[in-house]
Every structure is written in C-alpha cells, then in structure tokens.
Image (cartoon, rainbow, N blue to C red; front, side):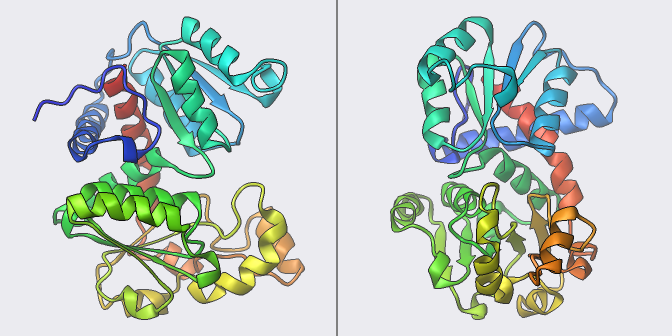
Length: 328
C-alpha cells in the first residue's frame, strides 16, 4: 500500500495507521543503511527545522539535530531561557510565527495539549519529542531494535513493561502495541495502574488489530516475554515522589531473577535511557545516602547479553530522521 505522510504531524502513534508505522520503520532501515555506507543525504536540503525544548534531553536533541543536518536541513534550538514561548507570548501566537519561519517543529516538554496546539496553529508538521503522556519517537526506535534482534513479526512479539505503568513510556508502548497488533502487559503495582480512559482507548484499537493489551501485578505475566522494558521510577519533575516510588516499585526492579521468570533464554532488555543501574550518577548517590536505592534495573542485567540499550539509543537517530524525511 502506498503511503504519503508529507505535511502530517507526528504527535502520537494513535494518530497513525499500522501501514504508516510500518513505512516509518522501513524508511528508518533504509536511512540507517545509507549512513553506514557513508552516503551524504540531501532529502531535507533547504528545509528549516525548529527544536523547542522545555525539558532537557540527550538522545532526542542529538537525534533531531544530527538527523536534520545529515540530510541537509538547518536547525534552530530554543529552550525556556532563549525565547518568549509560553511566557510573554501565547502558544497560539508563537505557533503562527514559527509556522512562517520553519518547515517543521519538534517539541519536547510537559503538555500533550501544547504539542497539539502547535500542530493546530503552526500549519507545518509538528513532532512530539516527549510529553508527560507520550513518547512516540522512542517507540519507533524500540520497534526497530526489536526487529533487528528478534526474528519474528512484530505482531508475534510479547512486550512486558515493568514499573510505573501509568508513565509516558508505558502509555506510548500501549499505543504502539495496539496499533501493530502486539501482545503487551503493563506489569506493576495496582496503585500505579494505567488510567482507565487510556486502557479504553487502546482496547478499542486492539479490537481492530488483534492486539492483546493487559495490566497485571502477577509475576506469572512475565512467562513467554520477548522483551522486558522499564523506565526510571520518578520522571522529570517527580523527584519528591522518590521515597514512595522506591517502596512501591522495588519488587518490579529488573533483575536476573525477573529475566529467568520469562523462561526465554533470548529475552531482550530495553530501556529508553538514562537509566539508574549503578551508583555512578550524582542523583543515585544522593538518594542512596538518604536510604533510597532508585535503581530500576540491576547493573548485572544492564550490562548483560540481554541488554540492547545502546543499539536502541542509536536507533533514535535513524527513526527520528525517518519521521522528518517522511513528513517534510
């Protein structure tokens, strides 16, 4: 089936068809192969891209900046300190200005509503680099990584997300799995169960695609998993919740014992990064001094043969590049 995404925004995988997601994954593979052959691209030559960051970033910013540059685009980076966006000028007014200057806009911040407003008022493609509710570019990279390491169709892959199952990564995975007809379990404590409205949305899509989307607090759900996925226990801006989260989520830490419960010797471990897997970061050291072990995965698992987190991190570049090329 022919797919044309030119001019389309990328706000959530729920807005895309399975064919469009497949197209982006296949385009990512082509762009990755081209880069590895040392071929210089010009697919974005003459395009101007704006990166709006209200939240700090490593992989997302690097991927958008480098991906755009490698295909010939020019990039402008704006953060809270370097623009009037959302302070002395409304989102609507700023979006209308940005749309006159730029061919595409990336936003990384807090509000899903805000990124949707940018798309509504700018008149150009807008890409969601992360909000409190979603992280669609990360899921594309994760799916590409799975296809590189697990030799079966995505619809036959079983993903378990363990930890805070109502965070943006868990929801993003639900959206992606629902669209692609995959099996997915959000594994965590009942106190942090996914919002019922989110579950209703994904179940409606799953009914059409054949996906199986579940929530469970029972470790029996780990059996047969192809992928174990987790994220930090307290997202940006939630540091005050660390004591309570450590108490709730320590039983859901990714350990060798958890991987063994999958009964799959080839199970993959994925993580969007950054990860707390040792005590070599300032935050992990400070919290441990206060008596809180905030590691969501053990160092043993993080460095094991099961871990493909750095392949996954590299694939942020290729999949984000594909999103820009496809929509511009």
